[in-house]
Image (cartoon, rainbow, N blue to C red; front, side, top):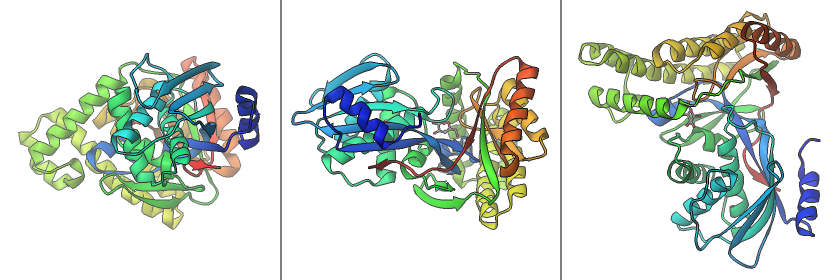
Length: 379
Ligand code: GLA
């Protein structure tokens, strides 16, 4: 059954014996291009997808936050006056968000809610950012806090970095907070400026989950971040956003060759992302697809965050006549690829690409034809 406000209200009533005051929704995301650029103050071009985390809720008179997770069939609660870290699990994202909002000086109020979602977990579609932004939207609704997407995204990132302990950039929270239906957002991760960019007419975005998950993502991610910082230092710029390819090439002799390649990916990816946004405004899917394919090669060869399965998926996808371009998406090492395809043939593309991947890799992928959705909302 698709999730909607009516279903959520019914589930809330089953749990708490009355109707909720609000239902909030915050979406997952897929990034079209601009990978590993957000923590370099650069540009990204993600879209919010039609898969989300939902919370139906009602304020309480005390300072307790009490939540029942439908998907885990599990209840958890905590007091806003004493937020303590617990075992890893879904409630930690809600606690982390409450902690971060209170650290920033917001006065919160207690609430009770039911929680569910259909963003696949651990697939690289930002289920955790969606949960953080849904929790933020819930707490904003109850405590009458104005919804300023960039501010809420920053506090969500802080919860993820400092409470959950994952050193992510700003992209996932910001697109979940600020997404726009039918559009990707060109995000300037330094200014936190978002610019809605329409999907080319007649195209669909297909997410192709390789069904592989890599444990080493965290350490590899932090290593890439450190290499980027080293590159920026040796180029004498605040962040790789400020460097050019010419400048990088002039400094090549003085740089570690691996660090050089990492920087070449980030600098060229920023340029590709800006070009991709222009291309979308012109409504040119062919050029956008070409840029996506180039992005994949750069991530595979220079940034080295792809995997055999991701490469195989991108190859299978690119062979289909309806595909304009495909690439790995998200942090890498496993998870999903994304493809831009002709809408009329999207279902055939999904079926055939999945079958070919399965046959060659002996693994069953999950495939989602996605619609670009609005960001977090309270209804
Ligand atoms: C993860 C992080 C994002 C971003 C991407 C790579 O999804 O959460 O902040 O760095 O990896 O582009």
